[in-house]
Image: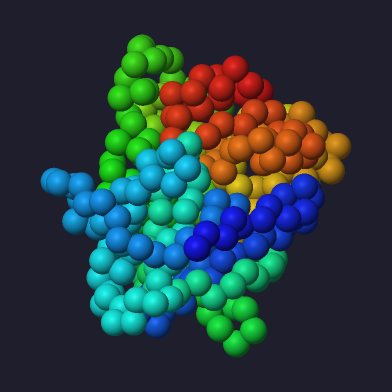
Length: 309
């Protein structure tokens, strides 16, 4: 059985700060994934094992002539296998220009919520860079842990993540003190972005864990531009933002910036795992300067070089 996840009108709306999450369970624990990452949900069935693969990879299967790798989330999370397999499902995903299926114990349903209802998890409790939670959502009386699926894929297959070799291939570069702001909720990806941009020569970087924190800072920039006449580029010369973030997503952040006349010239680069035709259209409507798919760090640096104030 396969159920295609319908892309609703939420993908056509701009800057509403809303998302839909698919609730699923593993060993009785409740987790969630952004529906924008999900292509379809399928009844679980045994798959073809792959010799010498990562222990969390169950194997591959081939629906509609596309080979998809299956990852056992229970194994990856160190949770027990399910005794009753009758409700087990595969969540087939598409992000970072790749397809993968995640084996879960049950799929509960879809909830439409606001990013402001998703709290940033405590880094001490949830493991910081090693943790899997990018946010905690309260839906009715339940707490749903939003899982960092990009981190899971990079842990299993490091070549799918940001590659510092792409920066080396750019050749010798001058140092730049131009101020760059980053909004990225994944602790691991934020660290990798900082390392990559520093290696590329950018020495003045402020990184925030979500759009709300970035907006709080950019509001102080706006106020300084308005009241003191401070040049915008001296405080923030470009913004690099993810789309998925707790409290405030990247699209809402862009809308707030573009609604401010004093910030209208600020270059904004969306750097996200979710760049597809629908999301690209949404970003264009909001006024993004450029939209790039993770993990193309070399392309990001070249784009930043070309748009920075």
